[in-house]
Length: 133
Image (cartoon, rainbow, N blue to C red; front, side):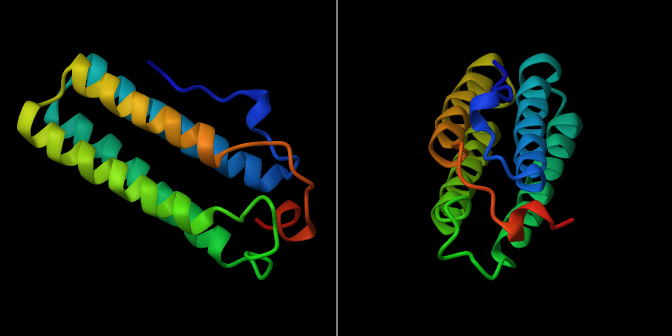
């Protein structure tokens, strides 16, 4: 049930693409942990890793002085808010039902939809997203 990174997700901004690819990879790792392992400590670790990386990713995007004008960043606030809701809903479901393939499938569906809405490409690469480290 992995989301997987697709070439169509690339924006043409190498730094932004690398960050978004890492976000998708962490989402896939979380899904795999829930589906395959199910061990509470492993799921918690994968969830913390995904959450921490998400916070860093959105914080870096918010630092961009072209946030309101850059096509690659125009959905930042909405994307972050929706991802927070998806993770909160997952947490509630996970606490109630535990780690199992159905919980993983629900999260996969939600995250796949999120990725398709907020990680589109291509857009014109701007200096603020191509040169940041």
